[in-house]
Length: 211
Image (cartoon, rainbow, N blue to C red; front, side, top):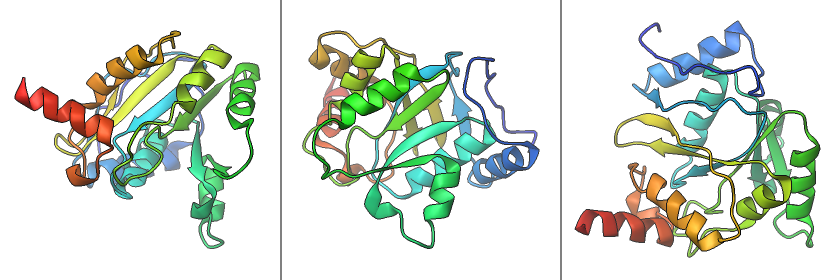
C-alpha cells in the first residue's frame, strides 16, 4: 500500500492507533481507490465539520481516514446509531453519543469540553441528516466561538475519490459570512447521492455550475 500518500501529521494533532490500525485504515482506502488531499493542520483543538453527508458510506471513509492517519477524533453521532451489536465499535473508534431531544445546554457543554481539553478534535455533521436537510445546524459555529477552537472543514469527494482537508477557519461574529465561505469549500466536491444533498449545499453547487 505504498501507493497511498499520506499527509504529514504534526506533533500537536491528537493521535491514537498503532501499526495494525494504520495498516487497516490504509487498506480500507486503497481497496476503494481513494486518496488524501490537502494538509492536516498542526493544532491541538478543532471543530471538525464533515460534509456532504448523503450516504452511510461516509462513515466508512471517515473511519478509514482516522485509522490510516492515526487521528484521534471525537465524532458526535445520534444515539439511535448505538445498537447493542455495534455500540462497542463506535465507542472504540471515538464516537460520542448525542441525544438530540435533550434539553438545552449541549452546545455549551461541548464548547467547555473542547476549551478545557489539551488535545481534542470534535467532529460534527452540520447537515444533521443525510436526507435533504433544509438548513445547516449552527451549533458547530457556536462551539467554535465559545471554545476559541478553529473550524476545520473536511469533505468526502466521491467524484475524485478523495478525502479533502480544508484550511482551518476562526469563527467570526458573522455566521452567515462564515457559512458562505464554508459552503464554497464543500461545493467543490462530488457527493455520493446528489439528490440527497442539503438545500444550502445543493443551491451552492447549482450556482457554481451556472457561473
